[in-house]
Amino acid sequence: MHVHCEYRHMCSMKRFDPFLMALICAIILASVLPCRGQMQHLLQQVVTVLITLMFFFQGAKLQRHAIIESVRDWRLQGTVLLCTFALFPVLGIGLHLLFKSIFPDALFGEDLWSGILFLCCLPSTVQSSIALTSIARGNVPAAICAATVSNIAGIALTPLLTGLVLGHVGAGHSPLESVLDVAKELLLPFLLGQILQTWVGPIVRRHKFLISFTDRGSIVVVVYTAFSSAVVEGIWHRVSLAHLLEVALLDSFLLALVLFLSHATGKGMKQSVESSITLQFCGSKKSLASGVPMASVIFPAGSVGIIVLPLMIYHQIQLFTCTLLARHYARRPAIEENASSHS
Image 1 (cartoon, rainbow, N blue to C red):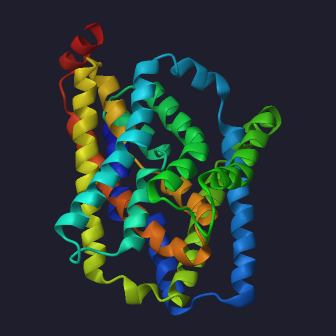
Image 2: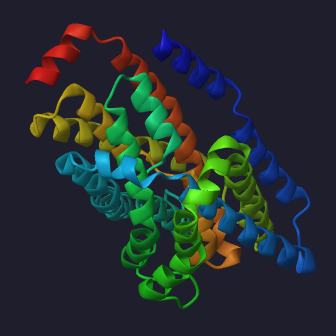
Image 3: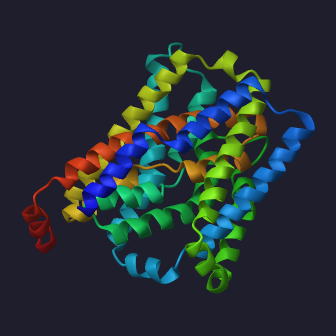
């Protein structure tokens, strides 16, 4: 019953996702009324404050003992990290080289390719990875650990990988400078939240709207600000509807590849069904919540809008596809689950 209730909740979210609608409205508003000059500068300051609060509250909420308990399955946790930070970048680079050699002029330009490669360097999601693993009757404690560790590791690994994969980061930034920038704006608030967890943690866990407001609110404001700069730079003259469709198809192909390879890896490692589900869901996700703030720190303001477009499209595709997959796993007979746990 619990599984079906969660699934119905996810399905209703897919039919009408207020967060997705807010992002679409932010893009439309930025396209019609982009912020400029002093207003843009003010919004960028607001974004910095919201992102700082978001990572501070995440640090205050995260309970250290839960992570220590779940990290014991180092083979599973290590494989999730390899999928997220090694398999994805390798596939991204391979697809870039392949499609550029086969369709040198047919596909979109380097700006959107940079967005796809940046997507490949991002950490896993937290909420949806855990929710989908729960719906699919997977290893939920391991999913909590994997998603959380992935996000913490991503603070250092994402800017470093982005610099290596793209060959450049932002306006003259080296990978090390980007790591330091992200650490200063994201890691320090997170660590401060951890330090003050004894006092702030209970308040944050009791008032979940604090995380929801700073998390989603910061992303909506970042998207509006980023697309305002992109519109001023002429983004809609460079990105057509056909380009967006091509990005969606490439995102779908990338997701399908990772889902297949992570499933095959779980079987090859002789993981239980529950742990294989965790590997598949946590290893295939990419975090919009972490990706948009990181893009705003790593890339110049004028290019953030086009960089996060592939991520926004991938975000919706991964939720829809993995919800269907979780429903499929939830229907498996209990005898299979029991057998796997004794193997």
